[in-house]
Amino acid sequence: MTESRVGRAGRRISPDGAGSGQGVVRIRVPADSEYVSVLRAVCGHLAPLLGYTPPEVADLRLAVGEACGLLLRNCVRPVRPEGRAQQDDLAATFAVDPRGLSITLETEAVASVAPSNEDFGWAILTALVDDFIWCVEGSTARVELRRQHAAGREKWTRSSN
Image (cartoon, rainbow, N blue to C red):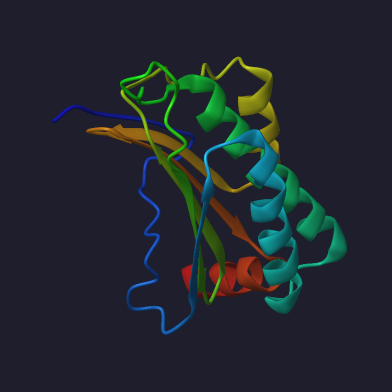
């Protein structure tokens, strides 16, 4: 099994919320750009409930859209015998912890190309989220995002002193 990782931070984001005592929302949509708006809407609904400000909500929605775009553009989808690309799922996990929100987006890919850190999409994501990781494990391509909200950053600052 081949594994490759590209990330702005050196740590892995746990998508399952283990040990956080907080909630996890999972949703699957067809791996098609027409369904990215559904994932953006879910994010737009969850983020205000978690205390994110309207500008932070807008940033998170944009980050989800761009991360989905990276997955859909940089992955070669499995092909059906009749030669058409499979309409497999794009899975999203929104995991809440006391400091913020982790969002994991993944899809099946027979091949993928890690985005360059000079790509426009990469620049957008690194500006909008605190952590951004691209990884491929076997036939699964994954983008992991982490965004702390203002209250989470305050907790982090206080607990790290």
